[in-house]
Amino acid sequence: MSLLNLTIAGTAQALAAKKFSAVELTAAHNAAIAALNPRLNAYITTTPELALAQAQAADARITAGTAGPLTGIPLAIKDLFCTAGVRTTAASKILEPFVPPYESTVTRQLLEAGTICLGKANLDEFAMGSSNITSGYGPVENPWKRNGSDARLVPGGSSGGSAAAVAARLALGATGTDTGGSIRQPAAFTGLAGIKPTYGRCSRYGIVAFASSLDQAGPMARTVEDCAILLGAMSGFDPHDSTSAERAVPDFGAALGRGVKGLRIGIPAEYRMDGMSGEISALWEKGVAWLREQGAEIVDISLPHTKYGLAVYYIVAPAEASSNLARYDGVRFGARVDGEDLIDMYERTRAAGFGAEVKRRIMIGTYVLSHGYYDAYYLKAQKVRNLILRDFNNAFERVDAILTPTAPSAAFGLGEKMDDPVTMYLNDVFTVPASLAGVPAMSIPAGLSAEGLPLGLQVIGKHFDEETVFAVSAALERAAGFTAMPSVRAE
Amino acid sequence: MSLDSATVRRIAKLARIRVDDAEVGVLQTELNAILGYVDQLNEVNVEGVAPLSGGAQMAMRLREDTVTDGEQAENILANAPDRVGQFFAVPKVVE
Image 1: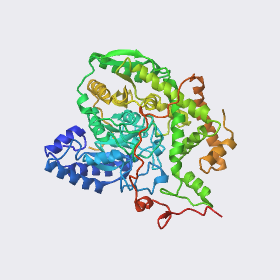
Image 2: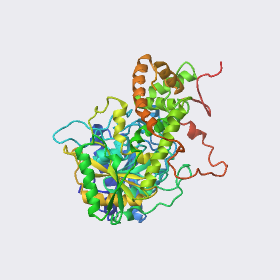
Image 3: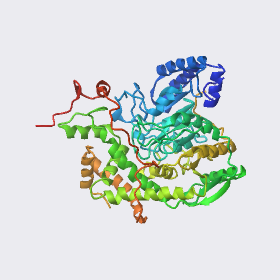
Image 4: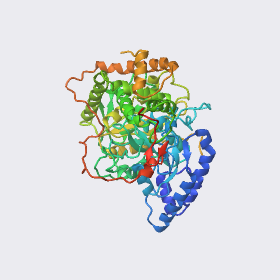
């Protein structure tokens, strides 16, 4: 049997039944990565020896009867999570020499659960992008192809390497992070499920910071159930993160079978944008019909400030980034370029170490926080952000969850949408509002475009009600019966 | 609002990013495109609306003001681009 085309849930059963060992499973993944990664560039750093050592420990746990549902499961770890002793770059040249002396809370919890780290997945530099083309280590190729075409498409971003790795069968699941759509949009572009949980559900400790009031970790996998299993292990209170929520972690898996009978599902009028492609709106209608057939009540709702989400995001996120990225100055860690004096060293280090998109965002952030412009830009954006939160709070008085498309299009070609930064930013129009409000949102693969590319639907839930998000997503997954696979994949 | 090239240079200085003369024009165009896009927020009436600074739906947590970590100089210095003993080394700051 192929060891590469299983779900996490199915693999756990097979490992428990000793159909194969964690070492065999890991060796198969290592070999697949060695064969395909030179083409796809899904991993920046691979850790085959570490993975095998972890697999041996997992096999020992399985034999000893102390294994959990994730023991022996090989994962791709987005290269934004600090991993002790394993280089962590954030896909930036400025962190090329950085080897963290400590482990992020999310990856530490995953290691304690017995997962195996296959390597560090590629991403947009500092998670700033929607296509993985801003990586300092080269773009990632989407394993999916348009019908009859071999053109290279983007996997989405910023968690593009995570998405490509899982879609191409180079990992059973992956960690991602989502600041404005960076889990959901790449999941949609590669036919995967991916959830951004409620802000505060997963600790941010040890995740290279981009925009701290928005950054959230979450899982990406081939099924909704696999995401539920992973999120359970990734979640929980952490005193090392001041915004970590002191809340018990529910059994997300138990919510999958709840069904949607009697649930009220909101359809926001404002997501029906001018110029939206016919196939995206047709898929959305299909999603509505699937939920209605399973007993949900469909409710038309309004989220009036939706159209301002991107503008708020492109003030708030760069502002926070300009502050967070001030630490990369060539003094304490990372790359350094020598200069005539200290200031010159800072300026040369940052000019050489940061890519164009990161520089743009730092400069926008610096400007909107600068004297004389703070009120007009940053404060104004924070107020509109509050109106966006109010929109969701008002809607959730009437509905249990909201259904929208995940992205305005299917995956696009490498080199497309490059005319100006704003064109690229429009990718995140449907995902950014949930990030600004801090509510959980999940993308699930729901169908194929006419060109044969995966399309995703997004389920948005109330704060800390990931269980309803999982229940609705599982219902959509059952109805969609998405079984298509990318043409480039390990067998 | 539209940025002129002097403002682009000033922002770069504040951000501690060296920009060449050739880059200033490109950055000016790109930054103005972004600022032009976010100008649509001027349409929104925010009178009486409080600013929302964070994604967390809770008050900031406090803890006892005690030492919880430390004695890790080697771990901290392990990634230093340059060091002298137990110190980070930088170019001379005081003349």
